View 1: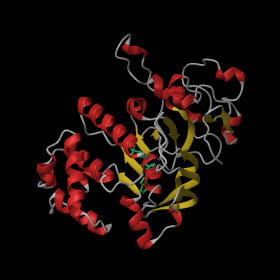
View 2: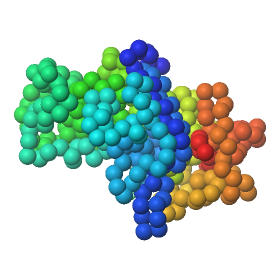
View 3: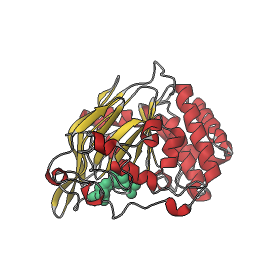
View 4: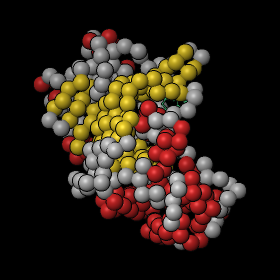
Length: 346
Ligand SMILES: Nc1ncnc2c1ncn2[C@@H]1O[C@H](COP(=O)(O)OP(=O)(O)OP(=O)(O)O)[C@@H](O)[C@H]1O
């Protein structure tokens, strides 16, 4: 729904797989993910803990660290090429300058020995920014917009700031170099509801003003409902459903998406109506290598889900990977958790 700005690049993640080395060998945390970020849109990625969201975010900057590695696939950014193929200085310059980011642990990753302002200048110098006073002014203005005293924050050390303030510093650092692709991993988790709403509004405003292509990673469906144009749902390293946010949330087709929605307590009505998804999400070592990764928790699983990769179905603007999503039966309101899981790639 956002205005597509000519400056906003498109991003195509194709057949992306990321593995981590474990005692049991290399195991996939992200498997065969295909996801396109349309220019000028905000895409939300949701899923329970361990579904591979942060690993996907790191891949956007080719920043997966050992014991992990990108084992296949590409992340093509318009004007930049395949980030997965970048190395050395090209890669370093890309991070921050072309792809702005705030990682989940960003609020703890500031340098405790330097003021925020000093770290900002280091960032500017490392990216050959000529106008450092301009950079400081921009940083102050972004912090002011997020409800902080920008000048004071820049003079502060990390230990002088609360978790929520550090989180906003992280968002400022993601935006300040004027990158046109921005990756925000859990940007508002440490914030109270009111501040969260303010920050989401500001992210949206800056996104539109600057013509960005933005990826927001969150476990919170409320956050994506608030901010994202498109929504991608991950489970066990797979993308199981994606499409326009309103459609996915309004009429989820994958049983996992349905389960996530049903697990949200309502503010009105009977709180018991919220039904937690039974079972737990898989870990690296328990993700089934074959068949549907969601089948253990799926109320409508079929025999084929045990062994067959779910087909990737394109239904209008929606992509669903599920054995049951294609047949008329399962698309009727099959309440509970829903049919088998699938994913959107190989
Ligand atoms: N450094 C690592 N070494 C081994 N396994 C890892 C490592 N980092 C992540 N994993 C595993 O990869 C899988 C995906 O993790 P990831 O952090 O990407 O998921 P997530 O959806 O972002 O979860 P969360 O919301 O809890 O951050 C998990 O099973 C996790 O345990």
